[in-house]
Length: 86
Image (cartoon, rainbow, N blue to C red; front, top):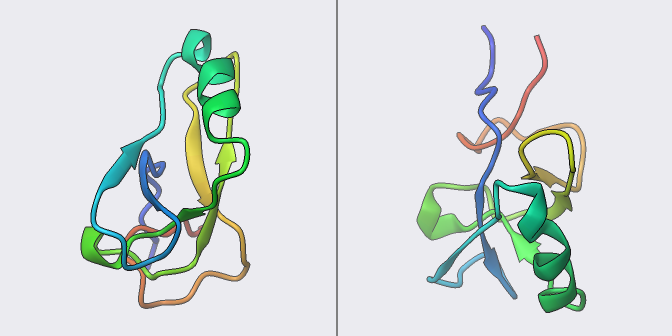
């Protein structure tokens, strides 16, 4: 069975049980401003968003869509938002 291969575009700040989602900019032009604005923040796979509650990192690119990725590996089976390889 193949896992969910969609890239994660939303997270929450500060902890897994926070309620307000944060959207990662899709455009490279917004990347640097986002990085500066959140340089000391932590991002989480929000439980209220259907996530697993683990910490996320940002993948900020200039040549493709930016996205969040899980910091830990391998992926737990409880998260429907996790990227899993074939």
